[in-house]
Image (cartoon, rainbow, N blue to C red; front, side, top):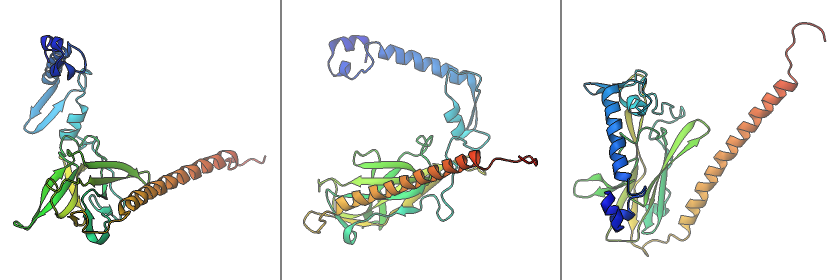
Length: 265
């Protein structure tokens, strides 16, 4: 907001988090960054190359996405384990008889790439898709901009990436109608043999969202939460055991397996 509007302290002033001079400082900073980009970056078609001599603007992220000679080096290039591919299911949705009531919770996890530096090109990491009987196709119903659709990333087995899509289904039947739904994961990763990022997606099994009272859910939601945290705990225990064994091996090598130089001691 402007300095004058801030003095009134209505909605405009309350929404300006950094004081009455925020607008002037924002304009000045954006002007400076624009000049730095114009002076240090060159465009050739769809490619952008920026000089790294100037430290006034962090151009590395944009450059790595679209013009890095190594091929999007700041995008995740670590592949999933040999038994899986990007977008393959790690754990599918688990609902009783393929049905879940409004107010319930569904989740699916996939092998994925780390989402760092891919937010620019992936508009939504998790989508909720609804089956349209008229077109016989699934259509995007919600994305991860929605408050109740959540995207979670975590490292799995120290090296690989696992991404989860979670949906907390609202009780509002007018907003969330009964029907067939599924979860979709979207992502991008770096490819050394291509100049542009490669995109992938993963899809869960379908499930029916039904009105309350039509299905005996019981404590299914609680069981889902407990099983999820047990899996996370199991992964962390494996990591702890691996690190402990590695430290023990280094300790044994340093104190017990001393190298010899061929001379008798």
